[in-house]
Image (cartoon, rainbow, N blue to C red; front, side, top):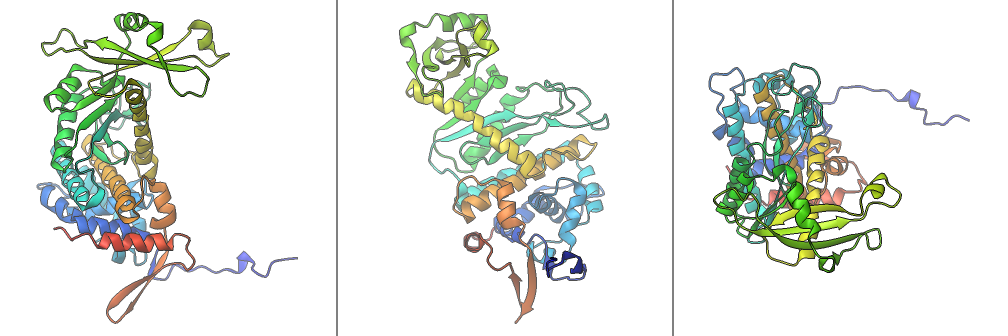
Length: 441
């Protein structure tokens, strides 16, 4: 028996200029407009006499909104030119060919101009309610590998430490919210800590300028165990919690900790993990060397594993100058791993997993675009939905990817959205909250 709703009888026609494929982009577009993103780009980005110098605000916003809509390459921005989408975005959507010319016009100095835009935008969003104000604030420092293929990309022809070709950007992430505070593209052969001291000083400066008035803490893994990082923290009165590289002298120091100094901590294996602490002087050959707390977690290998045949405990140690109980500080340091969620959202929520150009500076601009898109998504959730961390993919499925239809009556546009949409109440509430933000220009 055949259904009366035979799909073979459904006709198709691409003929409606009032349809909007990603109507929910009205939310981040409203936020961007109220924070004055387009004006910031027009003010701070000057491409000189380069071919892509005109209408830089429109071009950058086209790339940002394309990323939020799920576009992971330049050509995907063409979807925003379909139907009536442009009328819910608040700017002129540019063609993909124009966007490619725009990105290739960048030099490294222009990428640094986008850093200025990002810095100002973070300050404005935090002032609008997304910031930490006077609360303690933690910065997670990390890097990631963005794999590329072939030999045509500047800065990515050599192999990374993971033995693949690609780029190795530095990232500073706000703990607890996933905001990207700063990002810097580097060649693939850069080690994790290269330029980390300067990068950290600039990050701390922009966090303070954005209004973070509480105690700052930097967390990092062993790739950032470097004198430059510790020196920057001490100079700027920022606490640090950094995983240490375990050379022979560190192992001897750990092995000298008495058995009765170890405190059990919750672990999936009964009696499987303990913590203890001692004192250590890192970078003892430097004039500013000073003793700090060395906190160590020891973990029993999984029973039956190969490691269990070779050792009784696996040790994980970090240095810190923070005050507090050993167990609490160790647990907080482990939460540094949450930075990987933000990196995953940068790669698969927006489009950092693909750097499209053969030009290094163009890919640096692409990284800046993804950071802006990622942060707009996080702030849309935090300010608009009054929610915690919501991934970009979830926002796209529930809100950004809505189909809509525009009508005009009494000189006013109305965006009609699907009836019985499960998240309609959240959408309406978010739009009202975002529109309540004072317009900044």
